[in-house]
Image (cartoon, rainbow, N blue to C red):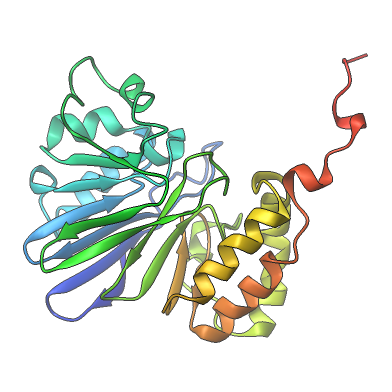
Length: 259
């Protein structure tokens, strides 16, 4: 079932949060569909285990064969593992970091991606969709070397990829974090993930300073619950820019030949 994040009658943003079988040994993942001006884009459509369910769920809102883009934050299996199937079922283009442009064809049958990759430069950019545009926001090393988040200017939603991710059951995902108190209770579901998967405090600070300059009303990650409203978003930014993570925590003891 789709969760409607935004709908002004012409421009619709949808989230699919329950397509990963919780009995499977796989992380919960959110997929996103933006439909506007007769065009559609999927953000981080995930792997093979979600493909059929996502295809059916989105068909109520937009035909897969008419997709214009797949927007990929990076090239992990939970992001674009199903890429070959989308390339076969539609004529869409893949938008991804230039660092991954020659790696993602390994997900596909030979030739299926030929001429269909839009390689994003490190500084990001914009893709036109209907009567609006989607910004590719640099988020390098959070956690992938070439990593982008996607900002919808019309809805003011930042689809933040792994930044803000939490490890929760899909039943909890539909309720966004809106208060500082909720955020504090939520920390236990996200702290371990961010300490391991985000590369360093330096990069987290650069990212937080960038987002503070943007007009973001809703920060929606690829895993777990979202952060809606300035209070919740600022609570997350205050936390992440102080977090020691990744290489900050590594010591010689982490690099020893196994006994």
